[in-house]
Amino acid sequence: MTLRPYRGLKLLIYRDPKSRALSYDKLSSTLEDQIPECEVELREDYLAYAMRRWRVNPKETAARLASLRVVDILRCEPVGEPLIGEIAYEERVLQDPSRSTAGILYEGYLFQSFLHSLIPVEERRYGLLHTVLTSRLLVTKEEGEGRAHARTIMLGNPAIISTTGLVEAPALPPEVYMGLWLLSSPDVQRLAVEEERRRLGDMVLSYDDERMTSVVVGYVLQAVFYYLFGEAFCTDPSCRLYNSHTHEELIRAQIKSGGLCHRHQSLLRGLG
Image (cartoon, rainbow, N blue to C red):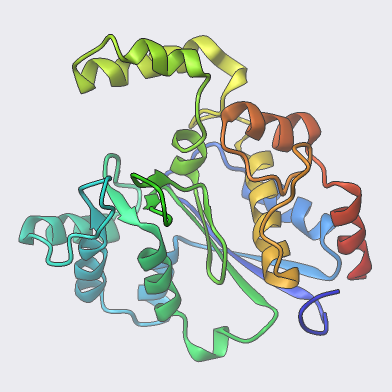
């Protein structure tokens, strides 16, 4: 059963303006079909919406975003006091959300906390789940880990799904990384990885992948289950709630299976 009495769910989904592969009509209709008494409302880019509708200050937002950047992936600590140029760049991204943030890392927990702080009180009531799709790459470092790791999803409210993370965070086959040891230049390594991605084809998820919508459906369901039931992930590798760490696992759970395990499907049906 849910943590609170279930009276329906309204999913507020914020678009990622940089992802050309996502079909938002298919995303919303699939979620409404699968989740009982669910209404999906599609909104523009989260920060653009916050500035336009919630009257969030653009300059303050840019400064805060710049302060959340991570430079040292071993320590995974935000820069704290950003440079003027970094703030200016974030301002330009806010003015044009389609501008690239490739190569920039943000501390995931602080990024999520910042987005949550922007939500007005009237939109924090139970039954409203904010789900942010973003191309920004989020990283976190858990206790005992030696370095930061890219994240596909940050569970909570708002839930944040990184479309860049869906491509970059899951591991490629081990032999790809074994070959990289022979390449000293980071630029050459990057080109080698891109070539390996092309060689692997449908075995991995890519940025313009037509399967991206189906994958995002699964990750939104992860956010919904965490919000309603307090359950983070599933141990069944064929369930869409499985916490995939490799592209092979992601493709299996979200594409080849594309469904929920019996237990989680029963929980979902029980809502109705």
